[in-house]
Image (cartoon, rainbow, N blue to C red; front, side, top):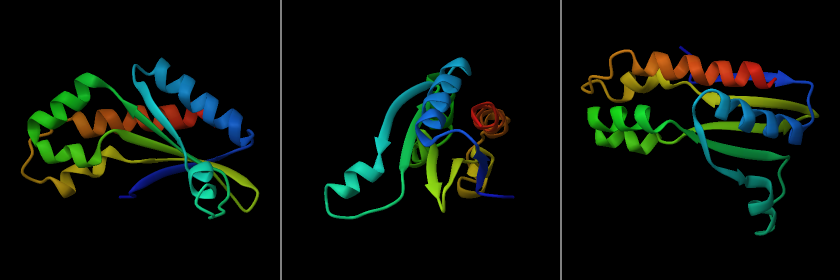
Length: 127
């Protein structure tokens, strides 16, 4: 199973970021923060291609995951990255379906699969 779900898009970098933020809200999640990694690193003298990390969350799902194992908080909130590499724009998210591999004693039920489907849908609708 892949750790990530990544697609390419023909949209501009900024359009892709805006679409991910809109689609996140439509899916019942909240955008907590959008990190402009390129800007942050450039302030320290480092240069990279455009990269923004969009932190997204659904309070009910986060609560249920934390009830199963508080250490799942290390993986929260869910993140969707929009980045450019070699002239192409990508949208990528970690797949929540992998959580049981890291937290085998947590009784997460269908939650990882449900959130995984939502994250993939947000990414697909954003491309």
